[in-house]
Length: 577
Ligand code: GLC
Ligand code: CA
Image (tube, rainbow, N blue to C red; front, top):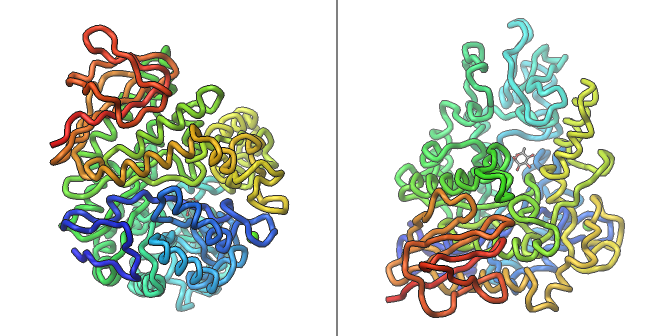
């Protein structure tokens, strides 16, 4: 393993032992550039805006940024539809702005990861504009087609298409192309070696500029099963896990490692929706030389798909399943390394989904979730704004939404005379735009994000929930976040120690031990709005806990049972050698 860093950007990062490495110790802070900071008054966040805020982020203790796509794009899916991988999206600025951002970040000891979107391109990418003209075009084979003479294409479901159909007919070629996402996002044909070579060249281009790694969008989908007709999709009530298991996926990832990643000190994380723990291990087992980490969707799936263990706890999903899921991943990764996140640009706000965003619980539950995310084993992926306790905006009208996913699904429901009201209510909780509203810097009309009307509404609660107010309040969610980040840096045993789940069947409390060579920690979190009890089964120290989110930590009950208040979180240092 190469332990040197480049660009002189290793200040404050410990790379002492072979199994220790910066991307295990860091917190990856995700920025949705459109929504972070506008620098030129057009209502759209941009690269200069990010550069202007680097000192603030560094001040919070952040040292790695993942930027959602910044490449040229017609923005059908806000940059997840790339029309030129070597150019910057004009809304976001220029290549000089990017070079400046990278230089400034490195000068502050910060790293930058870019979002590599190569399962598909935009329909406006030159390759596709050529490909769609004729079957004889050189680029035709860069994409996946179903010739019309073979009859109707086999059923494939699209994530975003208003008809949920993943095939779209293209008259000049008399064939249908495949798009797992919107029809403006045609899927690339990774079986074509030229496509893979092009992707690797794009990766070299950015890594040679000095970026520190990639988050890889939809990467499990790249290898398609070409035996289309034989696959009976009825066997897959949810087709997306099937999409993730293409026959050459791991060959391609190994090739990518050999051809590109192994030549740099960089990190790679694959987006791993619908990948199970045992399948996930194959992406990240160091012996297989593929990716460093896989960003699994375990928490989001459990939140969406499970029923409460006990409705009286007020937890709207199964906490027991959530705990078992994390324990299963922890075990499954083997010598690889786990990840954790609770929100991102595709999910609602963390506090609205796993906590409670109504007063007086918003701050308490946001702090509890902060402690949880930053004390689990695995690299935390932190979504910008969660450190303020930003909450869902809960739009009530379809016109307020920008997201192609929400808009297309609404259209479809409307066309089929479905219940659009019900859909809108559901989107208030899960819609992607909840997390995409502008960052709340201050209480001015556009929240300090912009001087012009922003591309997406600012949450009206920015008059009280904003960075300026929270910087001025020592008890704010923001200051709490800063404290936990600092504590995690100071206690590397919280990074490298083992994870052991306690009380797996307790329906309200998530509790675990983190055991390092030199220190042991106990973390307990009441995920519910009701008081809860826990017998940790281990002697508790007489000293104050390292961290707690209430002004004073929980009281003991009889027999040393912990009595936890709603959303109470405590971290104890049990012993230190
Ligand atoms: C990923 C992205 C999402 C995007 C999709 C298609 O899931 O996170 O935002 O819409 O891929 O690129
Ligand atoms: Ca701008």
